[in-house]
Length: 326
Image 1: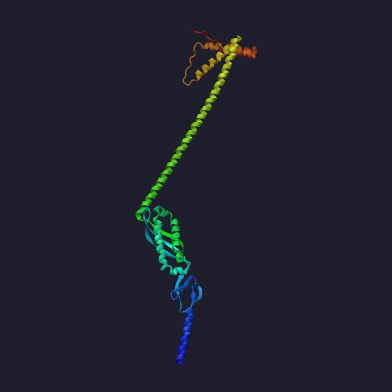
Image 2: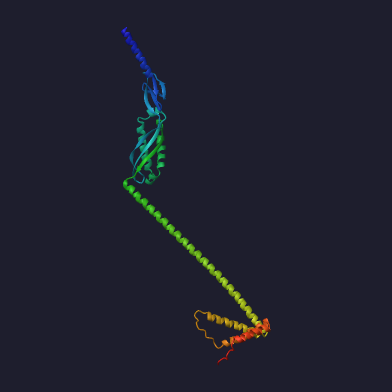
């Protein structure tokens, strides 16, 4: 009886162990591979799963969530023989647990090594200026190449980012001097351009001023010529009238014309700025005598009565001219 109890307890324990061995609970975000006698048979998804105890066993527990790995820093030589230190980060996700388990020995190491070699290939084909200024292009090319390479492993690379690109100290100093020289050059170009524009504007202003002055002088000359032309026409008309009067035997009109010219000539002589003393010549008495001709014209125009009164007034105010001295 004692031996039978021991056997029963052993059987119960065996059944319990068998049950526990055949029931597997897979957590969310993981897939487990099942091997039967060392060969892959199927994949267990998250939740409660049953396997055949003692024949099946769990092979690999694969994380199906997106993962991130750091890409160690390395020295890269660019196309123009500049050495820079580069590191990065990669984001990937397993979509086939069987391939990720049995197609590659160490998934993380494989992705890291593949990414580092492609960083050297991509950046080695670019100049230093392109490496420093086209980081997005580098990330895109790395992602395209690495994702195509890891596809047989059941892995999807979602993103590869270059974190730091560090040139040598002497190269950084040289780039700083180059940038400073470029900025100084652009500042001098802008200053020269501003001076050129200023000179052009000043020249345009002077040109417009000269054009306006020339147009003003031309207009003034035109007006002066027109005034002289009208004055000449009036003079010619007056001369014609005097000539007609002389032709008719009217000597008084000639006396008036000569006296008028004589008086205007003396007026201009008196208005001269450099003339202080005026000495009348002996012929000035002829000008006084010509006033009688003016009186005769006035009598002919306004009548004998008014002209007689005007002549008497003039005789009372003007003394008789002395005889000319020979």
